[in-house]
Amino acid sequence: MLCGETLLLKGKMAHKQNYIERMELNKQQRITSGLVSERFPEVSGIVIQMTYYHKAANPVLMVRTVNVIPTGYAYFKMDCMIKDCVENGGFDLTSAITDMVKHHKKLEKGKLVCNGNGKDHALAPDHASITYEIKVKYNT
Image (cartoon, rainbow, N blue to C red; front, top):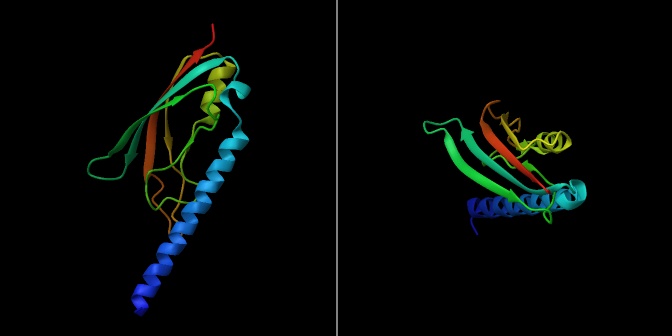
């Protein structure tokens, strides 16, 4: 194998290992968060609509809807969609949802900015953001 090919292969293997570690951590965080039915027994469903933005000529990166059912995990941290954003990035909607349930709110809208960084380099402080709309349905 040529030297460049060896480095490329090692880089791919390291990337795969990092990905596997991140997925395992994500799985553990979901389990630790508990189920919606345990954490919020009065909730029958949650719908989270998000629009992801990034710094580009066309700023809308993605529109996403997440439906959360009582048997799902009460884990509300959404990943940043910027490929290089790997450290402390993402959008945590946990406090917004917890506050909504505490005050029996049915609708909440807002915006969050990602504060993450690249593994080996800093990202612009406003490299990504989301606008969100959360609807909570309660048991009658």
